Image 1: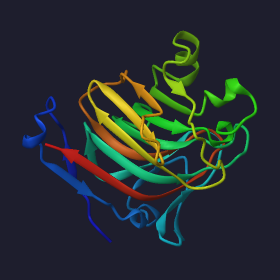
Image 2: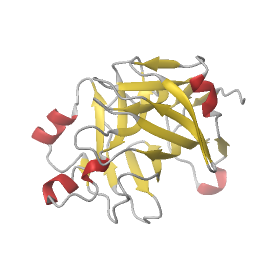
Image 3: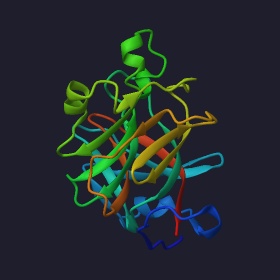
Image 4: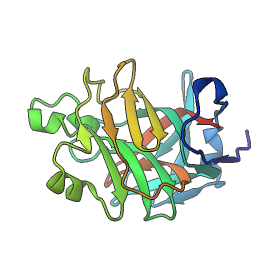
Length: 218
């Protein structure tokens, strides 16, 4: 078991030669041992080949598990994640800048839309939200196409895929698998002062998470 305590606040980006990077790979098993704050979910340990992580069960309402002692303002959050090709029952991602269980930003995926034959559904594959003020419904209605996008080439919706979320004010960039260009770039709508980091699932959704790495830059 690896203890983890991060305070990752950053100023404006410095020249590359002056930047100091620090990476941590937390032991996700501690999240299944009652040592983390789970919200509306049960967390169980998961071991599958080289992946060792956790599974969040599915139930009505959004849910998450906050990583203990982690505060993140800017940095890179990378992880493997697996959802399901089950319409409206698979929403998986990461919450960041969390102030409490209702106030946070999140990047999440809808695997059931990855390879949909419906072109409209495909562009709803990855989503940014800033709860509680900027829900996906509000963002889609008021800023269509700005805070969600397709993922191409699309991963298998029933298999693991790798995500890298780069949080660096004034932008958040999202990468998937080996796709060289970000699948989504947004200017975040939440508070910039940092906060908690957690694994997130949506309404009626569970999800599997492994190989989490957190990189900060000073």
